[in-house]
Amino acid sequence: MATHRSAEKRARQALKRRARNRKAKSQVKSHLKSVRGAIESGDREGAEQKFRSAERALRKAASKGAIKKTTASRSVSRLARSVHRASS
Image 1 (spheres, helix red, strand yellow):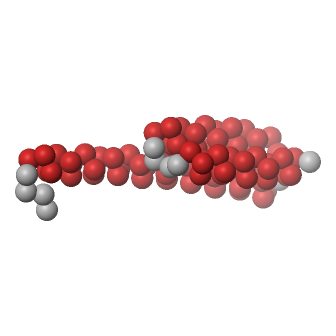
Image 2: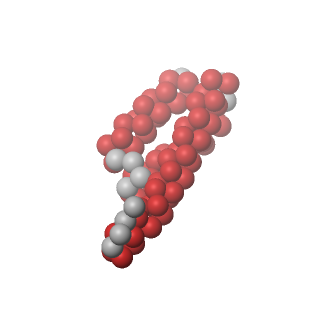
Image 3: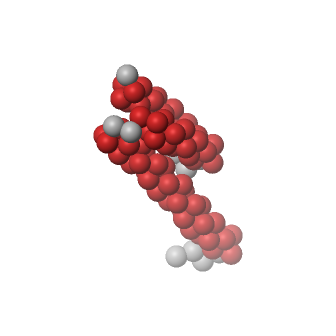
């Protein structure tokens, strides 16, 4: 455990950041799961609507640093491709 005041503060900050990042990642996973579920059920309009919210969540998580920007872009690209395939 930290012994210096500055190290204790850093530990507190790390806990807050970890909680924030975990929440963001969890929300992203939930959005992705809902989009995939809509695609599998054949709900085209629902999938497109959920895709937009999932893309927003992914980009927001990337801008906050919870996930890498390239990871978010790759996920958005793959998701968009699967939504497009399902709609055609």
